[in-house]
Image 1 (cartoon, helix red, strand yellow):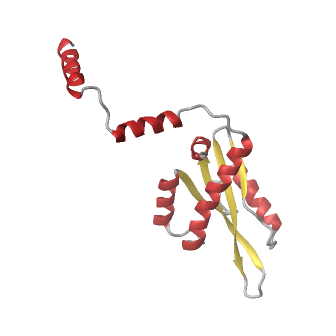
Image 2: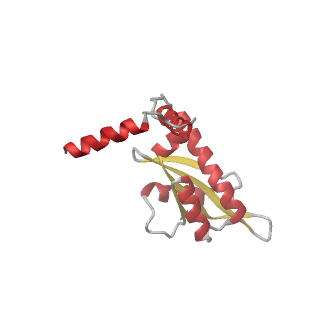
Length: 160
């Protein structure tokens, strides 16, 4: 133990206690991130909509039917979320997800179906967006929904 303390003291003296500009910047950023902020539920909801819409915009451009697993995996890692396809015949859906699908189906061929945010417990948020298919006669039909499960903590951290 004495050797460890001695080595620690020698290394501390050798460093002269100075930090590089990069180290100072990182410490400053960590201090700013750890400050306590008061954030309203409306701010959290708006941030969840912003994050969900950003992810869904990428998916709509590149994979509207949610079949490209590599793209979905990379988006999940980049945004720290879980992206799922919500379909009415899926038995693995949670109760809230099943209710949302039922509401979208009840909306039928309406073009006014919009994205949605729901709380899932105390620490999760679910963003959903209906995926519609245009038929040959010009009408639209609900096929499935895009579901994005987000951690409330990550949504709060995304708020600047």
